[in-house]
Length: 297
Image (cartoon, rainbow, N blue to C red; front, side, top):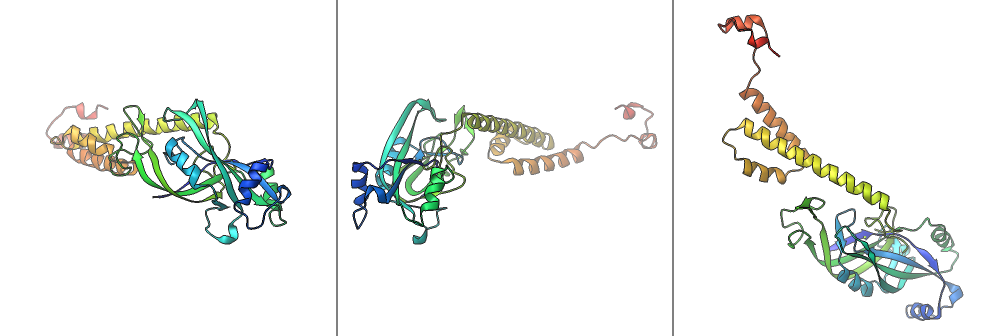
């Protein structure tokens, strides 16, 4: 399973002797500290991202080994011409006081990359220093994508990513990385905290943004739940023989477009089954009654 996830944030750092030794393990000709520019990146983390997916801690640890030596490109365009930097060291960083949406301690994969101080790279170095080239994304392959609610392979069960079941958020947990292809500078990361620190991620997650997204998600779930109840009610009015439990189970699998179409169909059936009484006096007399009840509104 190939995935591309965006994170965020590069920050320049000094070239230490130990770093230079690691860098020169990739260079054909030994490089000096003056010839290289190094910066740190947040490659990926264990937070639930915008796609309602996340890496578990074990996966991040494996990715740390896989990404050493991987090249940095732009927008996941696999071209040798776009190769610009290379990762020479990684480290799994824990922030246990910070909790993820899944409820566990936050951690992220930090990487250090280098590029050559050439005339060609001057603009890129300036963009990194100025915080312009910041967000990054990783391209890798994982063995499994697991549903957080039931543990089945994601997509094979009835649970939908982004919904809550019994108060538990459904997301796909990415496990068992098998390969790391590249990391890229991108404009919009899937993981909000990835950067030149799942396409490129940058910076730390904005608590205000997370609160807003959670509230929007809550309101969206509330709206869909109300719409599903309304569709079930109308369907039972349209057909006395309909089973409420079955209708509710069916409605849970439908999204807004299908629910709106079904509601419209049920309303049309109800209108035919329970036509509105005539409002004209001539129609009442034709029906053989002098009752004024047909005029009550």
